[in-house]
Length: 225
Image (cartoon, rainbow, N blue to C red; front, top):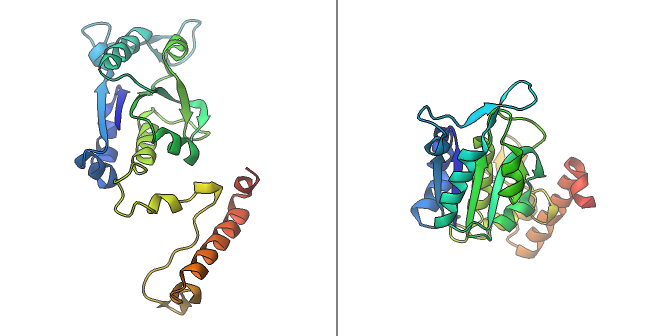
């Protein structure tokens, strides 16, 4: 999978993409993430990519010309299946969307800044608008890192145990069950006997029951969905 990211502060993505699972995914050649400095397509020698908004009001707006030129140039090398804009008013990101996007081959993510991007770019180029929650961040880079991480770990071969992602929270609209490791008795708190039984069927049933119970207590809306 190849993911291109457009950003005015690409340095914000260095750490999330260069460590842990994302680093291994790229080292294995399973994921290729390229972060592009939008100022490469600036409208002048000063690196301008934003301007005052028509109609007045606080905050700058990212100009259409740099974004349009960047998207056009990058698209010539990678025909994108989705051009994604990270924005608070986009569709709420969830595990189902991560699963769907992980099946794509080429994605472009636009990181907004200031008051966002010119509406004409959203209308003419963007195919999917995504929000990571009902709050506002300083820019789209952190949100883009969330998307890349959630998608990347689902790619076959990225995780050491390929079944691991199948049992994550929100798969099948259930939260993950409690997990335990050694010692079996920690300060008087013991691991449930069923997990020590060695009976795979009973363990699977227990985990499912715990997932349903935890979801009912913490996120009942998921069960309704």
